[in-house]
Amino acid sequence: MPEGVLNGVKVLDLSEDIAGSFCARMLGDYGADVLKVEPPRGATLRRMGPFHHDDPHPEKSLFFLALNLNKKGATLNLETSTGRALFKELVPHIDVIVESYRPGYLGGLGLSHPDLAELNPSLVMTSITPFGQDGPYSQYQGEEIVNYAMGMIMSISGVQGREPLKHGGFQAQYEGGLNAAAATAISLFDQFNTGQGQHIDVSVTEVVASTMMATQTMYPFMGGTQPRRRAAGGEFTHPMPCADGWIIVQTGGGASWEDIANFFESEEMLEPRFADAGQRPQHGEELDGLILDSIKDKNKWDLFHKAAEARMLFGVVQTPTELAECPQLESREFYREVDHPVIGRIKVPAVLFNFGLCPYQLTGPAPTLGQHNREIYVDGLGYSLADFSRLRQINAI
Image 1 (spheres, rainbow, N blue to C red):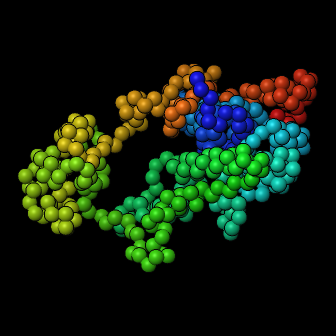
Image 2 (image 1 turned 90 degrees about the vertical axis):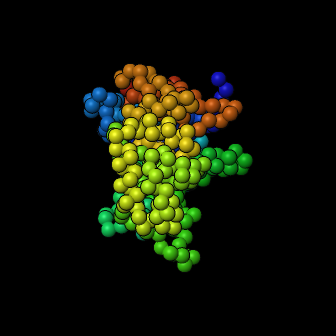
């Protein structure tokens, strides 16, 4: 197999959260040599469910598994002087550090970017935090729902007259990790050209706000109408229930309104109050009734394939099981199988994108806790087996 585009890049992943772990995994997915450095107790993600077969075992967190593919793993206690000394021995040999500690924490340990740049001037440090390294909120703790709320998306989610809504999952964290990986790759390009490293400051809240940049966040500065949540009422173009699930129907695409009316087998939809796009919003609830009556006894996948033939903009709300068996994702090899030493063989979501000359490679599962300690400290840094044993005894690793 050809080498990855980041082949030769060495990364230390100090993060214990989703965003930092995802950032480092992206680098490892495309060729970087990534070492997951955890405290001896294990990263916080190891205690985050869901767990394989609902067994709350530190090696069975599905979050930890998915976010730490293509990495090696070692333990290191930065709260000890010996641990910090070991860390400084590693720094000259690496290109990137990914971390998500509260701003100032590493500096308080003498491990800030300026401190470490004295050991390695080309070092890139990527810091991912809820609000960034400075500013009045920088020391505040954040969480997924906080980032969504503070990043404005919640203010336009849901319907008027009801509470704002947050999308399911941890999309803000994944967006933060993806942006951090992109910023790191850009900085590595500069590192290659100049030999200099730098500190990258990623605010997850700003990442969320940036997804609104082209439209909603510009209104206050340009005098436009303030964005609002959609009005309650007409559900057309929003999820609608059928016999065995939910579907999404939209106008546009290659289908005319007549095509859509024929799809729903409704001559009434051809009347001007529905066919005229200008009148349609005033009759939203009545239109909903026609559509809901048409699909209430129909299967969502039958509707999906029928809509494709009619060239309609149409989607099915897939369940987790359906997504895992999605023929489109399967055809593009989005899922890959990996053999984990504790969990066993398991299918994981893997490929985000492919390069034509050096496609994605899954080289290994998430590491077990301290799996590569001997390789790093004995084979790599040259410690004797007796020293290695003492490092474990004093809780330095």
